[in-house]
Amino acid sequence: AQKITQTQPGMFVQEKEAVTLDCTYDTSDQSYGLFWYKQPSSGEMIFLIYQGSYDEQNATEGRYSLNFQKARKSANLVISASQLGDSAMYFCAMRDNYGQNFVFGPGTRLSVLP
Amino acid sequence: ETGVTQSPTHLIKTRGQQVTLRCSSQSGHNTVSWYQQALGQGPQFIFQYYREEENGRGNFPPRFSGLQFPNYSSELNVNALELDDSALYLCASSWGTGRKNTEAFFGQGTRLTVV
Image (cartoon, rainbow over all chains, first blue to last red; front, top):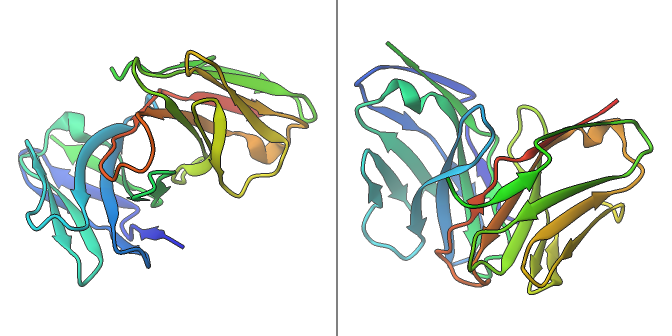
């Protein structure tokens, strides 16, 4: 069974600084995908970034990058130059290559301070 | 915006009643998945529909059922509502199954309160 762990219930960061949100995962699959989603108070899950298990390069999408360490089974999200609009819940998720469903972690609430 | 629309946005029901939640998938998407997100938790997979057939189910009882229509929109039905069914219900649409990097586009959810 797949499992996602996010050990930081809440994080604070100063505006314009970088922040790292931790994610570790457990799976017996060899091929899988790791995702990060942002959930503002409106409820919608907004896709941020994807990393495939066989991708050699760490994924980057604008201010978001994913620090993928396969041996440690970690997939940390790095947000550079934080903005006030980044305040939200952040979920790490994984999906096997059958693509049937996501397994989500419990989330981290990020608060960006002015 | 993702193009995935859920209705209604909020709903209050009484314990024991039945509820139907609706989801219009993004144009071109033929797969719809439903998730339940209890307060303060991550979403939990309920089931997935692919081309009008159930294509996988999470650990939810049979009183959670669904449908997918020829236009790929979907319904989630919950019978005999319990207080613990109070949650945000999220619908996600995607194209196909088995593609490792398929994104899923989520709707804004339906917040169900059971009293």
